[in-house]
Image (cartoon, rainbow, N blue to C red; front, side, top):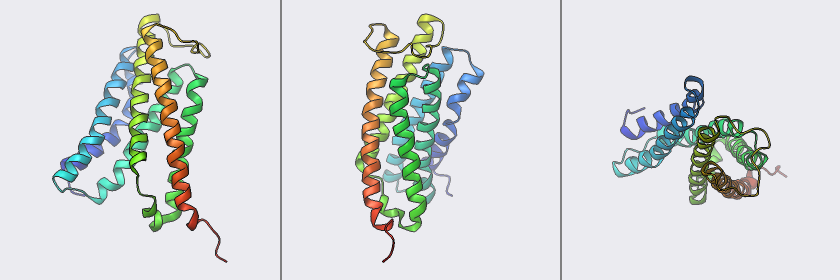
Length: 207
């Protein structure tokens, strides 16, 4: 592996993924929420920067091609686990989070099964938009949990988050995050079906 700037940024983003739950281990709330938000946002920004630099400086590498999607998925999956727990197991969040997690496992399994043929499941433009939507939704949810703890002094309880809509800043952030999460889940499901459709020729038994 060449220690280029894009590769270093990718590696740092991969290491930042487990750093999100560590914020809640070492810091008290709501500072932990905002620290996790800051770390997540900075890591998400590097996702665009490393790819842009790699193309601009002609420093694309096999390491970057392999680690970049892994870092993205690690960020999203770990952050979803954290945000689901700290949002009081909100059922409005659990369903889209389940769709996202299921799709990531499903597509990863397809790619592993296809092996060298997994090149036919190249990342699409819609999949990139899906990742962007997921990261924006998660960042907004972190803002909502942080503001909620700041305003009330306690984490949301199970079932406490529900419609109809509220006008508190924490509720507005949480509700915006939930809306974005559902949009991300829909995009995630669509891309998952697209990858499955493309993989079908390699899943049929030989006659």
